[in-house]
Image (cartoon, rainbow, N blue to C red; front, side, top):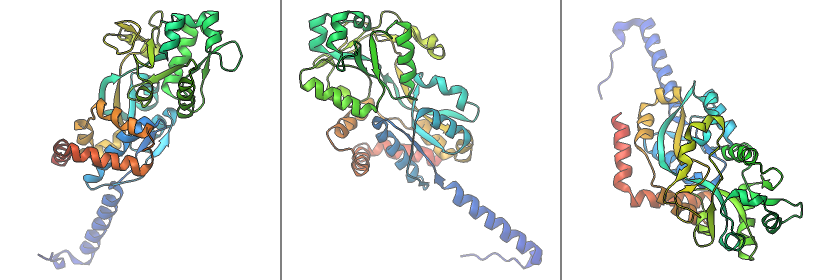
Length: 340
């Protein structure tokens, strides 16, 4: 090792150099810690773990993710309280753009446009009552069949408060004049859907909203167990209104019609990150730019979670297995990030 001769700098110079070194070490230590967030829906846990693992591969210390609802995340990432998440859904989350866009950005594409959303009913009830549209829930015999608590309204598993889908469902209830016909269940989604699956297995009618990728479409297969039903016409909240033409989608397996008037446009799943964090860590910014996960792989992992492999250890193992099966792709991400 070659030693630096400090004598020519004198005492004052040496003190200044030491101060610079101390500050540099402190800044380096601070920059190596990454604070991720994670969505409150379990179908996003796999992506969160995989992205955290890749950042660790670059030499950073990654804290355990903080589970946040949408409004809290977008405010937190703008404020710099968290650095990123891999659970942004756009255009569904357009309503939060005013909150985050000044100080944070959509920084990467996790999965492109295959993330679907819509309304489903069990196929047996759809056949029996001729249900093809959410409009059919205005019919008395349909409401009665799907009324599990005797309040005269059809019960639909919806989304918890604060989720982006809750805002759209509420908009739809007004747009299609369904307030006097449908009761939207806003309790915890996982528990509500587990109850719906149990009722389906007991031969009872079920009506629910879901998205893909999600374990629900593994437990209740569209076209076999359930069918996607349509909306009478496109109608979205103002921040998504320019996408109404994109709500009619061709080739949807298990829909009552093709093309299918689903009422929701296809979504991209995105990384959203704090701008200063991206600027300070160009290797991570490049990683976000090159990483993506096939939707089929997310489906497969979500199915494992639905079958009981849903602990933190299970999810970490799923990521280990995915990396091993996609090692060349994973290594190329790391190399491209390091080159940045």
